[in-house]
Image (cartoon, rainbow, N blue to C red; front, side, top):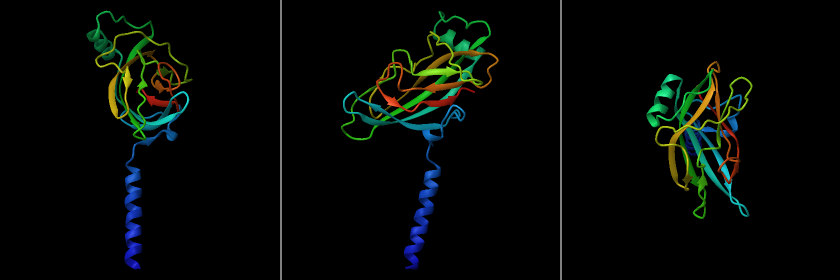
Length: 190
């Protein structure tokens, strides 16, 4: 009896330790608690118009580049990229997007958009949405169709106020090129 109890306690402790190593769950993610750079945020999206299928997603902002360094990378990507408006600077975010079906029958692709319209930047203070910018980002851009089981990474670009020290990036699966529904997720761009 004592051996069974000891095994149960050890199993419980191991499962608690394993749970603490899991990536951040989206329920802890909000505009007041955006995910830090390098943190994995897990969530889900529902796809389908008649019968919906639920797909698991994991999003990680791998790195951000801001100011002059961002402008240099944009100029290297395309000499046609113009400087941002007065008082603004570019922020580039390198994002990893993982997409998994829950069942073998989950085969619908997810559209990240021709331009990633689900990705927007918000001002850090009052969460006002910044205007979208049209620039050629470094390769690879984060766009296109992703199939279940695939992982893609790519760049997105924003223009933010130079004085904004804490801009936030938002992923909203309900907008843009997406056909899905799901929770809006927030990420630090600083």
